[in-house]
Length: 311
Image (cartoon, rainbow, N blue to C red; front, side, top):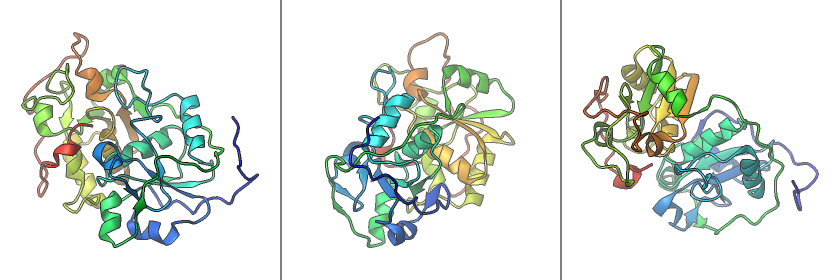
């Protein structure tokens, strides 16, 4: 694919310290050669009109989802993903920090997509734009699109990081695996209606409720690794093979991020999530009620931000 106006070579980005960076880490390196900042905000946060200076739009509601697929936010194919990231100026040697306007929400989806496509030089900004502004760091008006040179990124898909319905059926019957659901407990139990029309309420029989907000502190930062490990241990018991679901494969990635920080390694996100499983089908049974292993962890609370309960 052409890469117009791209210099022959650029220096690699800063060393990636891991899957999560703080606002201070990013502020100290903002504008460094080879550092790319992506804004993966969705919905009202995408329309807020402000960004970290120089951030480029990682549009999960646009080119970075497969709109030909029946479920929203489906992962694009490798060729489409490559073209979308090249059009955002990404090189294989760059280091990426991705954030969103809600905190740690849709940014985790962008991070997991990059990982699934073989790109490991990416991190999520802890606390997202709220943490950035709380630290007194600058923002600027958001540009509608990226207008710089194309990059040289090439997708190299990894097997096993994105699961389909058959994978989830297998995991539900695997004593070494746990399927964790990131939606609110009310949606999991079927006591609250699904926000998307045509979907049944409830959960997969054998799945466990772990609302993504329980992995975050009241200030929106991710909980420390020890607390994350305790939350996953309470939900999954001794099972180390973890599979994640949510409404449309977005907040499931917050669970994937938390599990990675907690030291789990056998992880996969159900790409179709409840947008697929919840459709009427005799092949995908649904249970209601609390299920098993859904006690709220000490000190945690339901996520009370209604605008964050859909994905």
